[in-house]
Length: 177
View 1 (spheres, rainbow, N blue to C red):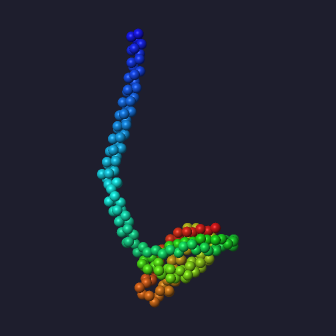
View 2: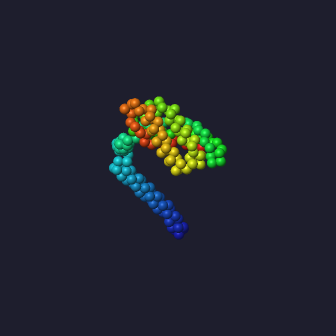
View 3: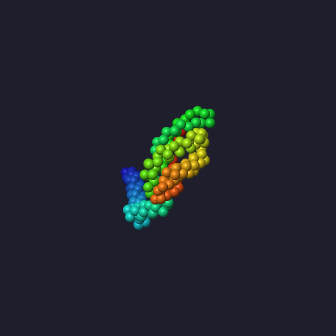
């Protein structure tokens, strides 16, 4: 009987060793998480003041650029043709970036003339040309020139309005079906 009792004792001590290892592993992981959290907190990652400083620098960078004023022309639907002469529909929306603070009112007042220029420029191109990156870049450059001409002619008597104030065009919708 003494031999049977000795055989049972090693089985009980094996479960305690595994439990000690698991508890030690949990304590080490908990300390690592707390240490990482303290490191991030000390670096200012959780500080709301840092977020404000970052947005201020972004706003300052934007205000330094000369073309910070915008005006949008939305949802133009145009007929265009492909190389085979088949007609397609194009939906176009774009935003004009300008250095003139009154650009939105100017664009609204001369919207018909601007839309006419856009229709003329797009009608002169095929859908294949407009779908390429180079075709879009060429269209942007020519639209900037033509829209600046229209606005310069329309506002020639007003010395408060800058000449060639349109600096860039951003296509916000450009779909051909």
